[in-house]
Picture (cartoon, protein in one colour):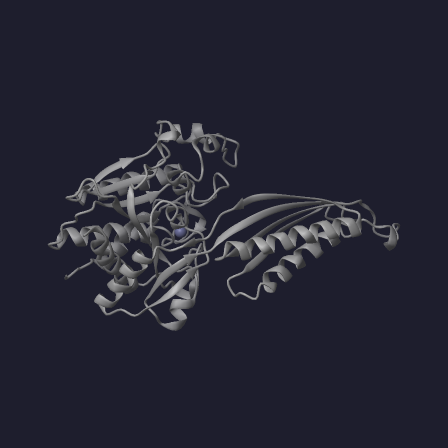
Length: 412
Ligand SMILES: [Zn+2]
């Protein structure tokens, strides 16, 4: 089958989309439900309607654009990503999967292909945790990972309830209606920039993702006793920061200790109270992130950290409490979807390699309800979440064309 994608149009539409932003170009800032986000959404709906797709939105704001297949009883083939963007980021993260996905559908509609299963483009709401502190809000709700009840309790950074914010944006239905019926999708594929350097370094145009690592995040509070940095002698101290330092090292030791390259641990937030050079730290807040493609291995690291907290608390006479902020299971991609992507690369004569996605995507949650895989295209220097994020037109075209071929195979 011959598939012609219009790469100039993809580039032009990504450019237009980048201008729906609260910061000056090249920086993009598009926070969910903001005016910029709402204008971007209205523009995207027009594009989908112009492509002949049937558009609907659910009560949280996920946007669906459907090409109805001949077999109405078959689960749809889904594709898509997100259009929200963290402050001062770039124009390709998420948007490539939405605009590239739309172009894949348009290319198939221009060809002589007719789908048996419906093909549906999705723009997930609030993939970024910027506003509500939780990533993948839309896909979590679609798959039932986040209940309507829990979502209804969320507030944004300015303490405005999600309920009020989404209703003000025009999404007024009951949140319980967001969860998708069983078998709604028969498969799901997400096109995305790699957000890492491997494809560029190895000069391989496409990556077929076989598993998605998922993070666990912990908040650890350590309480000791403050005092004068000169007056309190060392044997008498209960220094909260020294306890925190041992825990941070335990994160590294735990991650290295699995012996697997896929285990990573980061202690990226340390708040020391009162935070003065001449005052013994009385309290510390740590936030940690541990990721792995293997959930048992990741959880073994979490256990090591919990053990370190206990040991440190006893030895240093500190009070340590740990809260799990999130602990999501990793995803193994659907073998049939991976095979369809690989077949499409071969049919197109494009080299590819298998990859692990170390970043978090809506596909992690879609994999809970349908066989799911992802297709990565290179991005310059592996840079993402920055204004200088860049993907070349030929890579965008490769991604959209192989995606189109994959959707056609899955929908036949
Ligand atoms: Zn993304």
